[in-house]
Amino acid sequence: MATLAAVAAPTLPVSIDDVRAAHDRIRASIVRTPTLISRTLSQMTGATVYLKFENLQFTAAYKERGALNTLLQLSPEACAKGVIAASAGNHAQGLAYHANRLGIPATIVMPTNTPTVKVTQTEGHGAKVVLHGDTFDAAYAHARVLEGECGFTFVHPFDDPRVIAGQGTTAIEMLQDVPDIDLMVVPIGGGGLISGVATVTRAATQEGGHPIEVVGVEAELFPSMYNRINGTTMPCAGDTLAEGIAVKEPGGITSKMVAELVDDIVLVSERSLEMAVSLLLQIEKTVVEGAGAAGLAALLQHPERFKGRTVGIVLCGGNIDTRLLANVLLRDLARSGRLARLRIRLQDQPGALYNVARIFDQERVNIIEVYHQRVFTTLPAKGLITDIECEARDRAHLDRLVAALKAAGYETSTVELA
Image (cartoon, rainbow, N blue to C red; front, top):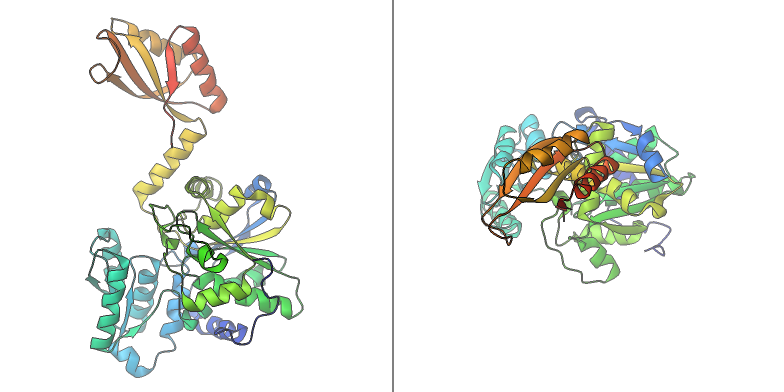
């Protein structure tokens, strides 16, 4: 993609004037989220890292921008009839919130298996929720049927010039705050955000600024835009942490804009996404969902691609289930050696567990849980497997404990994460 056109074609459906008009239109009704340097992440990645905290919007995602820009351009007749969308995520929240604020009826069609919390949140913003079908495609098809039957205006989550222009306002603010940014790293789902961002960066370069590269990020499990642009056929399926960008088919409008304006697309693993979510919470003290952390995941997984650059990353959303967040944090502790489960073979006799516990005490490692297994084991009848979940200071501390257990004659192994 490095050979993509250096000058935006005039036939593109969104111009810099569209984005600037959108910013003037919506700026009074959205949060002007900060763009702040992360000195710690900069040291870790070798780049100068600036973060745009779109997770601080009222609905915790940038999607408000495109939804509001679209709503503010509807005719009085369209406003009276209402709007409709198919979404179980941030687009539903943003559209419902601003429609309610503007007094516009909103209907959101969601798959029947949508988590109750998302249904409740959307209804809490004043929207009517219709549950239909087992998949997003089925919900989308039903929304288009209701659009025709009821005269609603359908608001697409990404493949609409008004939505793209609204999302591009994110980049206007970033470059106003940090003009030195020379590379934008942007998550790609359907492509609305990166299309808007790239429109702004290309205009900034043409108007006499320094060149600004735009790199998109997709989860390895859902490389839909990567496939579309590069002519590949990698599968798009699986349980990704970045569910907000888990799109099987990118938009037609956005695909055209990405092909024309975006310099590169990189893919990131689930492990990199987990690490990014965890680091943002630990270092920046901010909660970011998997899709919102994709930009940082790209820097962690492909550091050579970004080293030495002044990088702007959009933390595009912060809506993550609390149990999922807890799992991500615990898995990160396990990978760093601060949390571990050790499998130890013992003889089933009095004092066996006590003697092992003494070694944990000597090494000052905290025991959290103990699991005995006498029956479902391949050991002889007098054999005993004990799993001990424990907390160490770091990997070196854990390694000293394992060495001490083995030195005392105990067969010890670590239960590893996938």
